[in-house]
Image 1: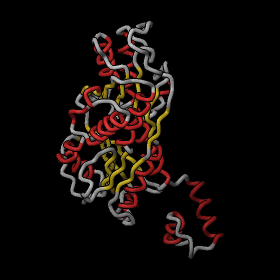
Image 2 (image 1 turned 45 degrees about the vertical axis):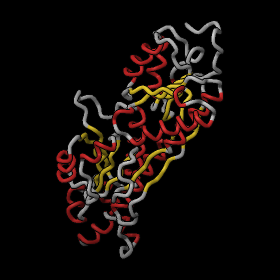
Image 3 (image 1 turned 180 degrees about the horizontal axis):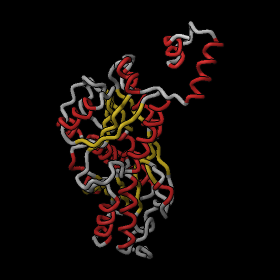
Image 4 (image 1 turned 30 degrees about the vertical axis):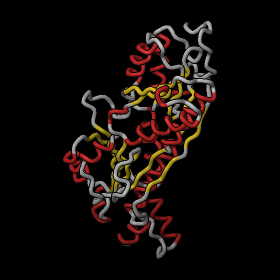
Length: 334
């Protein structure tokens, strides 16, 4: 039996190999416990079958995947790549040099960028020479890059529509508005537009800058609980921030949703585990990750021109929102 015959069977090229011979080769492989050398195969094929998932590096050396949304999307990406016999490398980067070093050092076939603001992406000097998919960004939609994001404007609209339908007239938007993110800007624009469509004047919608963390939500919620003339309906740009807000409000002596209704964004598992369970804008993170992987592999294999894919959103109503109590109603505090 020739080396070429064995190689053909190992690599799945059995058109010119008899079924009996192919079976003998597979039996021998099973007995020997042989696993193909990925490095050697990549040298021959000119492809490492490696994809880099790159997120902003954290200065505190804590895991890159602290966001439930990012963890869910990353898991979906890995599963989609594994099904196509590609492997995923998780890396942190903050500069174009760090990104370029990762691509060259590991001979990455392509990269997926997630968690960067538009300004941060511009600083990475992306030129499209390496197939690149950007998740959750409005960055240079006309560039030679592939994009995946949720319908952020509609998500904000749905949140405002829900809160105003419950009688809330003093609304607040909470999120990282100062970070230059088009995603956040679109959610805010949708929230304002949805409130306006329901007859809410623009000055009745306040905006507070907050990092997308549980800790930031706790601090903000405690502060709001002590504020006179506080809003009765809050919309946070992520579930993790919304849950922190609920805890902070409770610590400050206010009951959710009796005194303040809270809406999140993402519909991560966290939204179903807290009490009260969180009303939120749901996006399909599984589809989001799969779309990013499919777009990238289409680019790597030359079958997909640069394009964008938008993931639809829906409102999921749970116990963190209720009808607004008229001024002077009892039981506004815990």
